[in-house]
Amino acid sequence: MTTPAGSGAGFGSVSWWGLSPALDLQAESPPVNPDLQADTEHGTPQLNVLLLGSVDGRHLLRTLASVELWSPRRFRFYVLENNLEAVARHMLIFSLALEDPEKMGLQERSEAFLEVWGNTLLRPPVAAFVRAQADRLAHLVPEPDSLAEQLPWISLGALKFRERDVLEAVFRFWAGGEKGPEAFPMSRLWDSRLRHYLGSRYDARRGVSDWDLHMKLHDRGARVIHIHEFRRWRDTGVAFELRDSSAYHVPNRTLASGRLLSHCGERVAARGYWGDIATGPFVAFGIEADDENLLRTSNAQPIKTAGEITLHNVTKLFRALTAWGRPRASEGNPMEVPGEEDGTREPARGPASFTIYFLPLHSSQTLHHKTCYKGQFQLLYVACGYLVDLRQEQLQAFTARVGELAQAAGFAPQPGARPSETFARFYKSRDSAFVCTDSVAEPGPPTPEVLVPPPGVMDLLPEVLVSPHEARNPLSEDLIQPLQGRTPHPVPLQLPSESQVSFSQALTPPTGSQTSKPESDWIPRNQVPHL
Image (tube, rainbow, N blue to C red):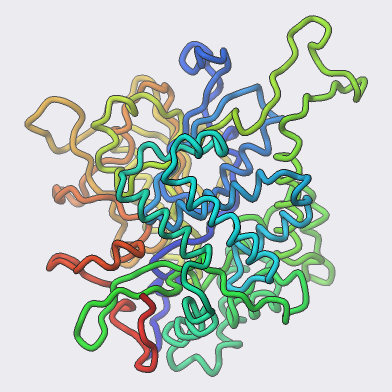
C-alpha cells in the first residue's frame, strides 16, 4: 500500500540531521547586558541557550565558528534530546570538529564529518576513526573525572545514572561490540524502509525522487540540490560521495537506534534505521553560503551541488574552530596581538570558552520546577524541521497556530526580523504578562501544557526561536498554553517522535499505555528484528 502524501512517514521516528540551515545563535540573542550576564569568575558576559531537539549540533558549530564577529562571550549550551543516540552523535561530532589538527588534517576532518553525519555507508578509514572514538568515549562516560579532564566542554552531570549506562552501551555498539555487517545491515534496512515508504511506487522511485525534488524541495528554496545527488541518496542513503562509489561499504552504526515493533502479534525490540528517507542531509549546510558565487546558476542550473556547498561550509567552520586558541591579529600588523603592550590582550578562545550540558531525556516538563534553571536562558530554541512530505496548507496552518500560542504566552514577533519560511522568531517584552487559562493548587509556576499542532502536522513544525527580553524570565513562561479551551493532561514534550527508544529502553517490556505509529506495526516477513 502506498504511503499517502502528507503523512510525514518519510521522516521516520528519529532525527539524525537538521532540516533547516545552521544558525549563528549570537545573531538571534539579545544584546549583551554585562549586569545580567556577567560571569563573575571570568569577568566575561555569558550566553545561556536552551536547545530542544537540535539533533546534530549544527547551530552550536556555526555559533562557535562565528565568535570573531561579536564581542567576547562565554557560552553555555543546554541540550535536550529525546534519545541517547542523538546525545552520542553530539559528542562524536564535537570530538571530530575539535580533533587535534596534527592528528587529523582539515580536509580529512571535513570529509569525515560529512560521511559520519549524513551517509549510511562509510569508507573504511572513517569507520576506523568512528570505532576508535567510540571506544574512547565508552570509557570516558562512566568516569566523570577523566571526562572532565579530556573533554572539558562536555557535561553529563545532569543525566540519570541509567541514561549514562545506556549512553555507554551505544558507544560500545559503535565501537564494534557486535562484530560483522549483520549486526547492522544498513543497505538492507534502508531498502526495506524505502519499499514501505513508496509502496506500489517503488519501481518508479526515480520518478518519485525527481518529483519530490523539483515540486517540493526546489519550490521551498533548496534549488541547489542536484538531481543526481538526490537520486543517489534516495536509492542508497549515501548523500556525500567524495570518492569512488565502491569506497563506501561499511555501515554507519551511528545511524542505528532501537524501536518497539509489532511482529506476529507481539511487541519486539528491533534495531534499525528509523530516520529520514524523504528529505536528506542537504539542507543544514548545503543550501546557503556566505560566498554568493557558490549559489550562481548557469542556464538555470546551479553551478555547485548541495554536497559541494556543504563541504565548503563545513571546511570553513572547522578552519575557524581550529584557529580558536590563537590570539587575534590586528588589522594593521598581522603579527601584532591587540592589547599586548598595554596588558589588555583579549583572552584566547577555545574549548574552555563553552560548555555543552546534556539534560535528561523528556525533562522539558520539569525544568521550570528547578531553581537552578530559572532565569538562566537568554535564548530558547525549539527544533522542528523542513520536510518533503508536508503540504503547504499544513505548514501555513501550523505557522499561524505558533503565532497564536506565542502571543497568548506573552511573546511578540521579533521586531525587524527578516521574513522566513523556516524560522519563527519571538521575543518577550519586559512588561508583558504571562497569560495562563489554567491555575494550579500549589504555589509556583503553572504546570506547562504540551504544544500540539493541528492534526496531520505532528512530524513538522516551523522552528521557533524565543528571546526573552530579560534573562530572569522563568522557563515556564515560554510556550505553555492549552489548546481549544481544554486542559490536556501534562505529558513530556516529544521531540520529534513518540515511539523512538534507545537500545536498552527497547528491551523493556511495553506497558499497556504504549502505542506505536502505523509504520511501527510493519516488519518485512523475511527480516528478523536486530536486537
